[in-house]
Amino acid sequence: MPNRNILNDKFDLGFFPTPLHLLKKLTEKFDYNIYIKRDDQTGLATGGNKTRKLEYLIKDASDGGYDTVITAGAQQSNHCRQTAAACVIAGLECHLLVNNFKPEISQGNLLLDNLLGAKVHYSEDSKKSRKEDLQELKNSLEKKGKKVYLIPVGGSNFIGSLGYVSAMKEIAVQLNQQNIKNPYIFFATSSGGTQSGMMTGQSLFNTDAILMPVQIDKEKDYSLSLENEILEILEESEKQLDLSKSFIINDIPVIKGYNIAEYGTLTDKEKYAINLLAKTEGILLDPVYTGRAFFGMIDILKNKKIPTGSNVIFWHTGGTPALFSYAEGLQT
Ligand SMILES: *Cc1c(COP(=O)(O)O)cnc(C)c1O
Image 1: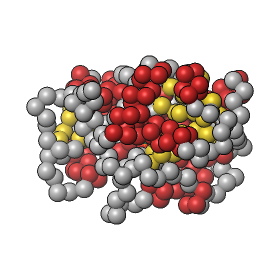
Image 2: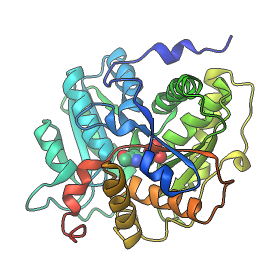
Image 3: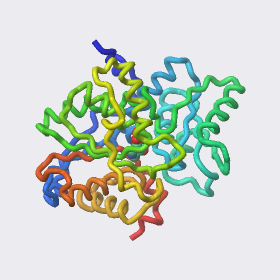
Image 4: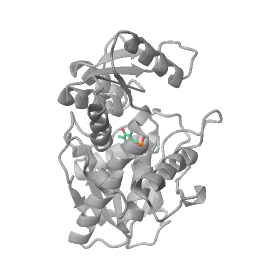
């Protein structure tokens, strides 16, 4: 029996299962049955996909007797904001390393980081890599006697990915209850933890879903490719969870072509997607991740790149607080 108990070993931070429901008006507009999985409603300080990962990471930190958590991200990092909230709940000190200089006024997620009591450090014009800066911050806190638990960017390592292994178990029940067969599941993929968790969950719980991960970040030639980062986590899962499957790089689907603009750049495509879902269904997307991924999904449906009549699920991964820091770009 694989070591699946590990999935029950978590620190509760959110409200699960999140709803899975039909998008009625959008379904009428397109030749597909379009559903949405609401991980924007996980409940942790406005929610998002990092809540699921943090349930395992925070458990690991508190079991290990750590008193301080550090992590890093963009200024509008949803991961940083949810980590800050999780630390409040777990009684841990939280330090966040965010890119660039301190802005005159903190908006969106950065505002919430501060409200949640996290200590925000700015990388300013550091010439070092984020990894090195993070290690330096860890060392300085350890010198002050803190026991520091380091969460990687996006919470994407094996432990964090367990959140989406168990999310696949959760959605398998809902698919069965709602009689949704062979769904294409679209979602935003960035640091790889969500996708690797879903892939592991697929092989453990045998759902008939087809994963459609839309790549968000522009390809960089100086870092490991997203596929390689995902493969590293999958290899760890094979060992730790005794998977019968052994993944290779070609097993990893990644939809490219929607990651032309830089990470965080709002273009007409993201704006179109945000307006479409807001004005047809009253649901808010975010400018960085879900706006881009939803555009990709709609483009694929409009061009009938998957069989018409199929069941399609958009897995909403959250991020709506970032909308407020894009107020200027979103004016109409
Ligand atoms: C972090 C994030 C993602 C990407 O998840 P990864 O596990 O990093 O691939 C998608 N959507 C939102 C809103 C996020 O904050």
